[in-house]
Structures are given as C-alpha cells and as structure tokens.
Image (cartoon, rainbow, N blue to C red):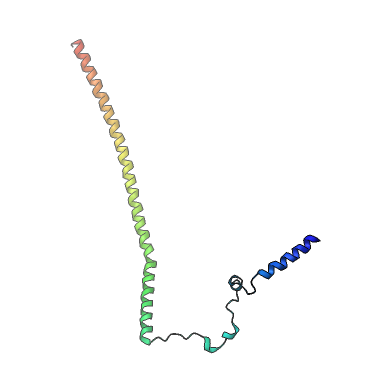
Amino acid sequence: LLAFVMGVVTMVRMTRTMPKKLTDATLYSTPMYCFDPVSKGPGNELAAPALSNDDFMTVMKRMAAMEEKIKAMAVKPDAISEKEEMLKSATNRVDNLEQELEATKKALEDALSKQEELLAFMEKKKKKKKIFGF
C-alpha cells in the first residue's frame, strides 16, 4: 500500500514539472498540424504568376525540344546494343585466333622437338660410322 501511495505522489510531482504547452514534436507528429480553420477563404489563396503569351510559347517550344531529345535518348540503347554485339563478335574472333595460334605454336614446338631428335639420331649414326671407319 505504501509503494502504491509513493508511486501516485511521484507521478503527481513529475507531472507538475513538465511543460504546460505542447512541444513541437507532439504538435507536428499529427497529420493535422497545418490545419487552420481561420485560413479558409478566397483571400488566402496564392495568386498564380502571370505569364505573357510569348513566354508561354517559348516555354512550350523548349518543352517540345526536350521531349524530342528524350525520345532520341530512348532510341540510343538499340544502337549501343548493336555496338555491344559487334564488340562481342570481335572478342570472340580474337579468342578463336588465340586458340588457333596456341595450337599452331604447339604443333611447331612438336615439329622442332622431332627435328632435334632426328638431328641427334643422325649425329649419333655419323659418330658410329667414324668409329668403325666404314
């Protein structure tokens, strides 16, 4: 019972020290923070800036030019994909040529080793011939 009474007294004392007016955080946390019933009326609306006909036409021309540029940019990825395909085919050809070159290099090395073996065999035969003197 004493703990309950102490809790109530503490809550009363704590609420006295809290600020009486709402803080900005609690005020702006609700979606209705900009609701102002006094601001209803035709006098509070923002006036639209007046544009002359010439200004309007120049803005419209610039918008049309920008739309054309955007359409042109939308078409460009097709050209880029063609370039990518050309690049891929070129790299494939280079890879094929490298493989053929490696195969040719291996064949040449094999032929060279066979020639060296034959040359060594011929030299051996010549030495035997010289030793026996025939």
